[in-house]
Length: 149
Image (cartoon, rainbow, N blue to C red):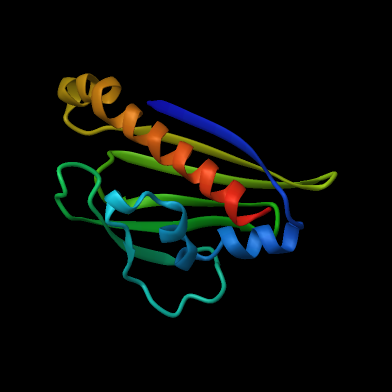
């Protein structure tokens, strides 16, 4: 099992930050274009426990994959958790935490994940997967800084 943890200061109020990040419709705004990320689930206004969200993504070699996540936990304006139900990972558990601090919001992502394919997955982790996740979150960090000035 691997874990990625990123914390970012967002220059906005807690309600605005929560509304933006808890909407699946905004994910494509903070995901690199080359990922070919599309939210297929329509009409999601409010996040709730049990919500299933379907995406199309092209993480490697422009090969399209369906990714389905379920929102398993929600504490309004504090945190939510999405878990993969179908997709490229054996396990994907993504915690999104929000904490109001002076001048903005401290946002923390904790992603715990496991790759399929046994030893092949372990070999692919440092060469492909970890590198790609680091790039995605670096891009997201940059875009969030630009969006919330």
